[in-house]
Image (cartoon, rainbow, N blue to C red; front, top):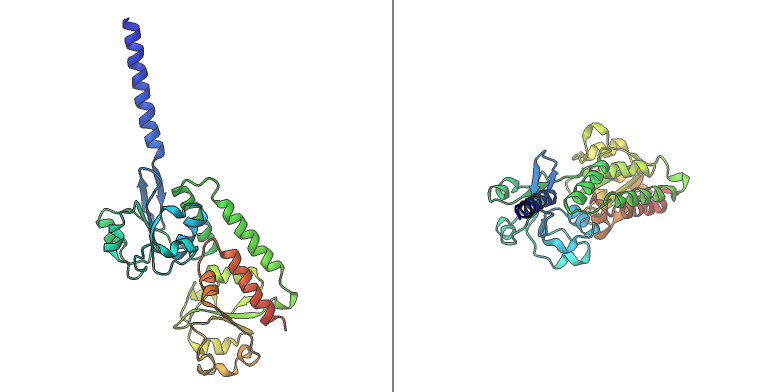
Length: 293
């Protein structure tokens, strides 16, 4: 009888240890781009995303239903458009975010409100992909956070799509000298940005020198001196292009080699996330139409 009692006692002890071990194993630890390790008791079920590329990555990983709020610019896929809006990276709506009771908030390292949210007890994962390698790493980190096996399979498909877009281009587009204006104020895509890296993979030369960084603000005279063969720009910024000092004489403008991207295309192009292969196809179409003359 004493042996049976002891056996049952040991069984209960092992069961408790197993439960404790299982609970410990269920915890999730992810180190963000600040070097801060964020620990959660389990994979987050309620997520607020304040960066469109992160929103799209969560959905591509098959966890879109866990999003309970997004920034005002997150508009893809269609299902996120009806979610509560929580401001943007520059002006996050702290009250609205807290009210959504998120397990974790995804936002850029440059976003305002990171420390404020953390001071209120919220878990914040700050991620800011600027290069293709960053985008790949973020895909893996979010896969880890969301417990998605082999999340990088998505990245492999993206990489293959970019390669296919490059191979589709005619030889005469190679070595075209291109200026890509990302946003108002003359901010350009530098060679070190994910856009600049994509341009290189498509075989064109970026007129922005590497020393200027990923997304530098470019003086109009710089572009005049470089005299690009082709200009890529969004429809929001194209007004008054020829009126910029000295730009009327640019080769790209004289020969009408200007790719004007729609708002939807610009969204795809400037987000380092799961639609990067689509971005490569958009850019390749531009080069084939305007650059192969």
